[in-house]
Image (cartoon, rainbow, N blue to C red):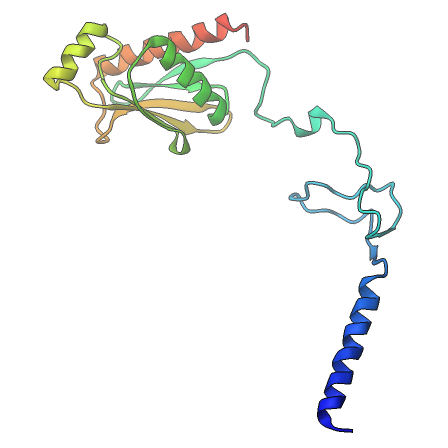
Length: 202
């Protein structure tokens, strides 16, 4: 028998074996009481049979309880916005919410105050205002500053901390605001954060 014929027969035999194996159910063994990693989204229920087949790929899942998936920092206590002073006399705010929720509260407060927003960079938790003196100027004052170029963009920056999220303000070139500007801006922002929370009944 020539080598070509033997090769052809070997390939045909392998193909038939693979086809036969592929048509049969595949048994899967697992240990229900084994520890699962923290990244397992769907751990196999311990009350299911120890052996399943690929013909029955649907397994009943335990009922989902909201308490099991609620984040630890998604607290239901009342909103607290505290002022913190640094050695230069500038103040920042600390909100007893996580960074994501604080961003939503901050964005809503700035919208209600009608402060001009140049950029919302949520990935870096930076909200850029187009006028540093927004807390002290009315609409016409901001309009005049725009045309006379008497303005520098200011960034409101969220700083995630343990149990709270800080809110600080600085110019876009990393320079700090004057104490007067900082005090005026943060005071009005804090009042609006608390007022907005009260109006929503949270």
